[in-house]
Image (cartoon, rainbow, N blue to C red; front, side, top):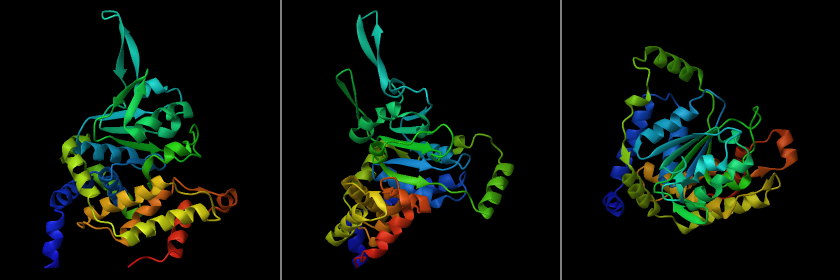
Length: 325
């Protein structure tokens, strides 16, 4: 009886079917990285931008391109370099001698899914071009406002900041990313599977085998479903306590903002929907919280010197707070 009530409340069958199709499609090319794929799908369903960090050669860009290819929407890629200017991203006004007027030529940021490769290779001047468009889904050029078409998703990759020729992203920009996904090296078994798969690969172009699973309108519909999921008041309080603790923790110089609280709620909803539930649980919150907070909190200098990681501090914070049941 309870199962019938559960099914009638929110029908998540289309969402679950789409998620399974995307996972099956990606597994043909990507070996392992299940958490990365789950977070990417959750981020898209939660209407958030995603930052993917890892050393070169571990398929960060390929995974992002495969996710983009699984959605039938306008895709655009921008390779960030030290000499890239804001106008190279947003667009610029060009004089048209026929009409004797300036016309705005849209930059590559105008699309549905934007892949920014090696985002930390561009200096702060170019990074600032993304502030307005990532938060407000619009671009203001020469006093005119240009709205972005929905859905609008930024998938950005970066190498760790200690590598040569990189710049730290401004805190205000980091806060605009829903998740920061840290992609690790594959295990021995996964490495063997990668080599074997590539050795046996009959076609060179792996992307050509990927067919779209969702349209742009499908993504908007599924996002509306995710937003409608139920959240108990005690779970909202649980999230608020986690964020409050980041602001009062002695290991942290900078805590989470209210945007971080909303990010946890929205991403937990997306994860619950992916698991076939129209309500979130404490486990959903605990699972998404590290990806939401690791780029928003800042360790004190002495903790950085000790080699403490943001994920370790987040784990300690969650352990201190009573999990609601």
